[in-house]
Image (cartoon, rainbow, N blue to C red; front, side, top):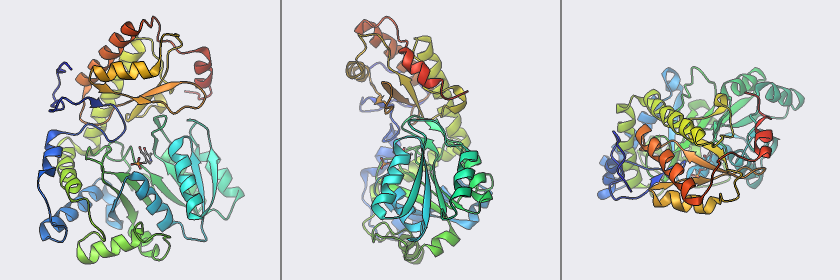
Length: 395
Ligand SMILES: Cc1ncc(COP(=O)(O)O)c(C=O)c1O
């Protein structure tokens, strides 16, 4: 792998860049923080847990005093499940706004939990809009909660959470947000967007390593959540109450992951917080998308809907383009990309998050060009059906 001219250090062990939405490329300092051991009961580790919780809360802006942060062991899905089970009462009913795999996973989670729910399924990527939410809530007075996905990572679309929130609260219901892949790079300030709880995880835009997620919720909802959860280990109220009382996690904490996360959080702050992190990712996206378009690739989404998190491209129509080979050749050049998740047309995804900057993104585009040449692909243009699919979403 050639060293990109980058302001950020490239992976020290020579491993490929992860152009994926988490786990993602982390800094050496983040990884290095995992070299020592911590006692989970010890005051040093309790102080680390306190720092983690207060630093995350501070990202919410001025209204954060009404909220608290509850870290939860496991991957992001564990925290989503914990949030849904803890804040939707057993006799509640949820409206899940789905436009991709993660919306559908929330619906599936509610199915497992035995919570009543309805799904607004917009297919692979079309965004759920405020007026649709308002209509469904007006027609079904039993719905108590709306579940929205902030960035639907399976297509990369940034869903319109502001208008979803307005419609939800105008109808007197409550909003829960899965902001897994967006939080830390896209503002979710409580004075701008009303919601009861949100989740994200360590290995997304804060750029930590995988091992825990976190729920940030209104304190009144945390109080009211007592007894709702079906699960001992995923009970957000119990984790919160225990942490506030003892300063400890209820069960074995991912000590090394927490240590790494604190280094990542400090770097996030030094970069200018959510605004600074979001600006780097936006630049990553713009440089990468412009370059890929110059090569003839077409993105699924018009610019209005493109997140600075991950971008879906249509696979070229050229018969010589085979995704698995494209993937392997890109990996040989030091870049791990991601398969697509669209059901109607073939696609692949390129992530913009992690320890990468625009210099790296230029290298990604150069690697894609070289790879197309090696494969003998003469045009990266997608099939006509892909463009017809894209036309469904007006700019
Ligand atoms: C929006 C969203 N929700 C949920 C998840 C699930 O997280 P995990 O794979 O860590 O369980 C992801 C993972 O990328 C995601 O992007």
